[in-house]
Image (cartoon, rainbow, N blue to C red; front, top):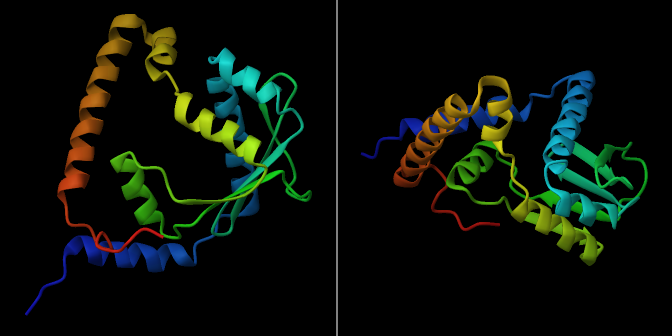
Length: 182
């Protein structure tokens, strides 16, 4: 008799629990505003990314996953602003994986989620360049708060923990791992 893995049981319970869970609109709105502030903070550290976004000023990108939507517009300064999702976007990016558990697994492995792309190809190429080349320099931000040496030590410890977690995720037989990607 085959026994069920505790990981697959936990994944099934999380899926059932998360399916009916919807945060209040004010929480979603606040999280979206904070995400835009964070993205702009990261973009301000990358002049090439700002220049690329400035060339796309006024263009709108909507990102969707399950019932969540985020519509952003590029500004003349090469930053992002949150816009009401009422207008037809120039680019629509839809994450096709519905399971938050599977998305978390892919992120821990360092994989990008599967995305359906509709709209302007040039804008899609710029967004892809941003995803591939713009990174948050956590150590730089930490060094402003606690100094260079402690920030470097924390960064080294965090990278070690992340590598160990990725190795653990890769070595486990996770539920649904035998399914072909959509």
